[in-house]
Length: 362
Image (cartoon, rainbow, N blue to C red; front, side):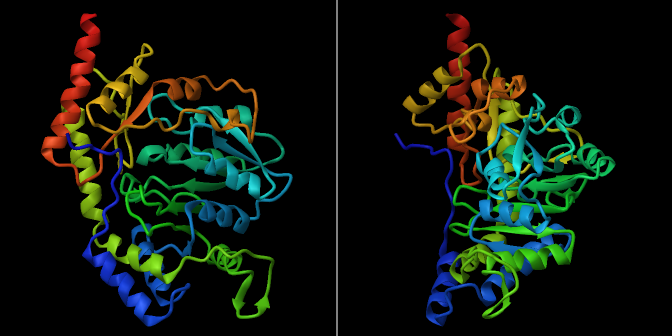
């Protein structure tokens, strides 16, 4: 029985050839390939300035720092996310303030922002979870009315959009991740994007020890550079991301039409989901049993995320975020990557439907 993993990065001949070219050039650190990658990725973001870095977390960090987020500030952020969303805020010296989610989209609930704002609030960090954009029109309206900055965490939202406007182009800054399991990869890597070229320049300084001119350090910075090796992989992947995204959407459409009982992803009208994850919802304490059943049948799955960020030892807060808490108990992500063949899709669908058929007869 062949195993169907939850995620499967695709590295082909094109990526290998690109990397070999870089290795033979001898220019392995940040160089011309990084610049090419930045320019090409920018085309998906209405030509906004793009700054390539070594991870999605670094992209979040330089986004926040470039906007001036600092010690004493507060940043609103969902607790139902990967810890990096809040960690990047904490690493600036600011305080993450956790907000509940909408129970259909799993994204930050704009209706909950007002109750969390204070005199110290400087920004909102919005996470487009699973590849579905948050309600950016409402969030941006709230932010502008309250003079708040907005950073979009697009780690899972490559090529997602609202009415044709790409995720990553609504806020003042945004961050994408190219970790191996994302919709495209550079091995490790990320980009920060900005509305303002001034903010982008600050990010370039921050990623390179505070230097634009060598040995002339204008500010205190980090070493967060993307390598030309990583960029070479990314350039090959960019040629395929549109096709891959369409594949994910086709696979999602198949599950939407053929899963009989599980609650399938909700997509508001006008929203384009990029399906980094296809996340179903299983009520009545049956989620873990379904996961066990799938594993026995050779089907991978995962819970994104089993613990709210504010409950992790690093934060250890006691908060009442009921929709977020309920989500941790009911969500389950199943394979959705574009390389899945019809036989695998049918097996996943059949086993999920069989599970619900069995429990309904018990």
